[in-house]
Amino acid sequence: MIKLFALVVVLVSCVPAVAEENMFLHGTLVQNACTLLPEDEYVSVDFKTIANRDLYSYTRTPSKPFSIRFIDCDTSVGNIIKIKFTGTESKSLPGLLALDAGSKASGIAIGLQDAQGAALPLRQTTVLKNISNGNNVVTLKAYVEAEPGAISQRNIKEGSFSAVANFTIEYE
Image 1 (cartoon, rainbow, N blue to C red):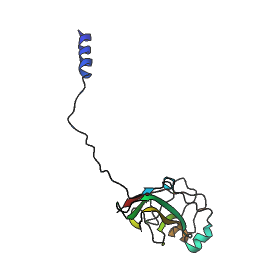
Image 2: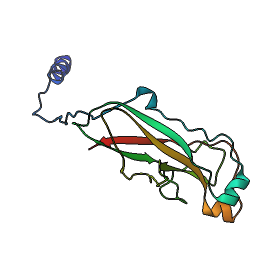
Image 3: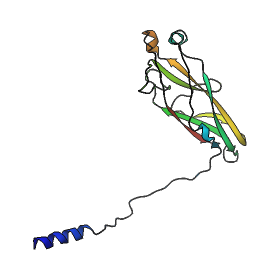
Image 4: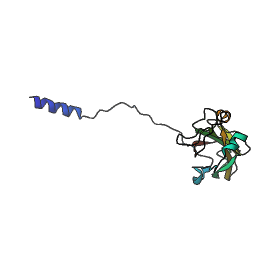
């Protein structure tokens, strides 16, 4: 009799349960004004070698330009490109990128600018360019800046460094 009871429990527990609607999926389908050139989905900026004495003297490096290219732009869909950068923010230099944890260097952060040299702080959307039909290029700049405390205490640490930012493109 005990065996029969165990068999009944197994049969009852194998019956599938049907729940009421409890999962809702939704979204918005849009058409982008441009297509990001596939080679520009991942942008790399190499600062080469930076002398720490230059950072002590000038607080930052000259800006290094880089480009993001757009193809097949259609101004009937949108004629303005906006960009927003996200990443780990420097505590000492708000708006600038902090170095990755694996970096050997310290006392520095990485800043971003538009082509005219205006700051592109992290987490702020900025209008970059009025686009035209066809292909468009947006030129931006990056630079390395010494943290104020590292300058005053003269403790900028040398070594390799890296930082990662993500960018989001919007069209209007």
